[in-house]
Image (cartoon, rainbow, N blue to C red; front, side, top):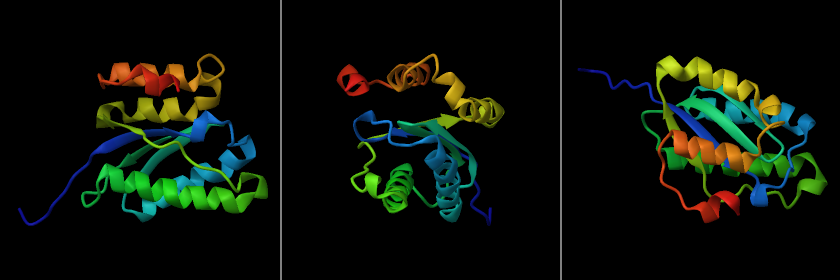
Length: 150
């Protein structure tokens, strides 16, 4: 086979430092396209970026030449610098260390896209910590409770 091909969809989630609601609605309107562009520039085609004031979700195709850790590092570093440049009040902005990444089947991609598009409505009923815990349980990811709630 002369080509190396892949289609691995990743649902990536990470939060602001201490889950501070630092991402205003206006900032999110610029941040989400910025994150999508960062992914696209890494040969990780973005399908949807969403989130609310204290966290982001991204659904993207993982480049066949990058690891998830490399993508996360690049996305967090680039976006953190970008956020700090947007407003002097955000000069101390940081993302929380850590992240969660889940594989998504192509047949479920539309459902995940809809879920990410509806984050504001979704979080009227559920906190980020509750959502995060449910995602970890759904994807059967072992976790330490101390890190979900702190």
